[in-house]
Image 1 (cartoon, rainbow, N blue to C red):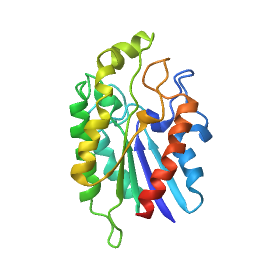
Image 2 (cartoon, rainbow, N blue to C red):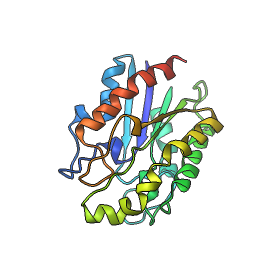
Image 3 (cartoon, one colour):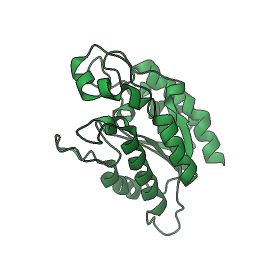
Length: 214
């Protein structure tokens, strides 16, 4: 049995911009991935709304700084064969990550370092890493979403692929661009509808199979 940890934000949690609730279990991309991989792989979904890579957000009771909670996740779910990161969207908030893709790249570097340097239990290997770039933002009529992220982040969100490719190359990780296969919803400009979160899970099946087989 191999174990894959999907560590992300609301895109991994399955936030539905239409209802403000959660997509159906079978529509969330980690569960679509699990179904496609079959019974020989355990997929653990660790998604938290608003999670950043390494930046603090004191506006909510939950700890949204991904670097602070990642060691707990690694300890809890080890042994791990693969860690899949889908983070960076919330780093484009000016109040947390500063609003630039550059900060998201720095944060992703730190998360990768944590995985590579973590003191796993004796006998357990360091897991492989797959960095998934968030999809591009799109125009929306949602005023709050525009003020929060979209107006200033629309152009920055298109830099994720190049920025994360640099991280993947430097640390010899795997890399996948979600923008190539799915679109964000016009309801708020940065979340995924049910069709697109399923599409992401389906697209990652062959990618993860190859990574695990390598």
